[in-house]
Length: 219
Ligand SMILES: [Zn+2]
Image: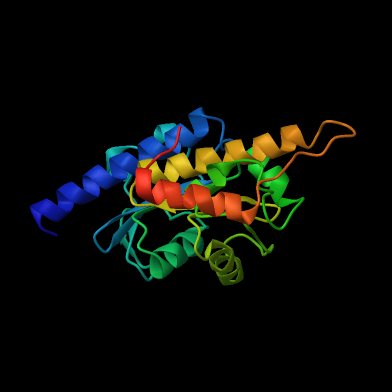
């Protein structure tokens, strides 16, 4: 490994650990559930299985190649590694965040697609789908996830949690936070007895997506 590669790996690992700590601090995961990864060239830095994020040190870096062979570190990579690798194989993602955020996970047990209660769905590429259930860590779950992610940057995993990706760790993290917020909003609006939330139409959402492409982030 060249000095330049070593530096990129070190920086990416710091970012992975900081983002994983953020998911715990912001209440998106409890304990060591959920996991974070990011690419440094052809190496994927990923949180290890079962180690609390506040105990991860620079020398604990876990890296795998794009086929999942461990190339760095002694700790075992997260058992959800197939999920992360499937996103990298299928998209141009630089980072992936997976959580068991409570409102998003609750919604994953209720609907095949998050109802369009807010245009924030446009930030995730459109109405957010729920991937069909399969056991964690399986190839089947990774395949179901890819189906749900088509033309989207995030999805729910039925009775399990969330997956989002982005061009950076911050972008992937922000999309998870948006998705959790969107699910919380729908749960809140739909919990008023006798009333049902109004929903945006597909055309109204597309209008927002067009505006996003033209003007950037909305208010
Ligand atoms: Zn999980």
